[in-house]
Length: 113
Length: 111
Image (tube, rainbow over all chains, first blue to last red; front, side, top):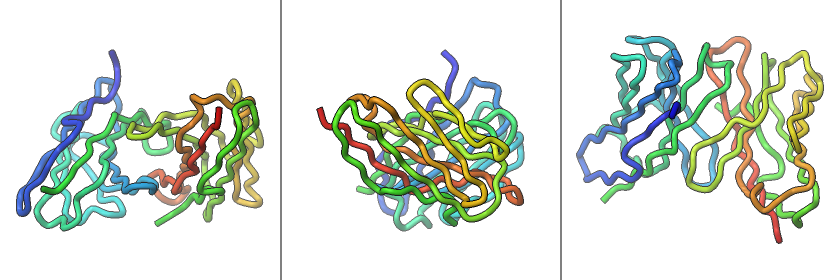
């Protein structure tokens, strides 16, 4: 099956802990994105990458970090500097840059213990 | 930064009725997209309309775009219970390099 796989589905973070959310795609897409969604709200862009080994900050990058060492993978680390990490995190990819259709994973729900 | 704003924020209609959602945006665009999100799931792309198009159809969906008013509408005809979801418009920015999503319309279909 082609698509985007996010894991885990649920994640709990202890205070002061860094946690990493996984995003893998087998669609051969160049561009990948991370969004944060708070209850009843729209999506806010955290980071995006249009090519391997390159990524750009979105609107709410503070407290987050990413890497893009492989075309298929775009992991997101929620660092201890992110004081309000509880949210639904969505990963997406697109074929030819940001104006094209985005394909989404099923999301990771992160909560603080 | 918010580019698209949907209206209404929430909409409840009877099954079989038509549902209309609107999206307004602020700057010039290359295209506008509509997505659907079922509760607790990822978004699914519905339709894309380019800035030089005025109307587009896909099954029970009809999208219009008025670039002079910087607005778009999504019409779902003959609604079904399975259409219950949140609907988001997303616009690119001709001068930027990312897509920006609106805050969404929550659609509920009553049986």
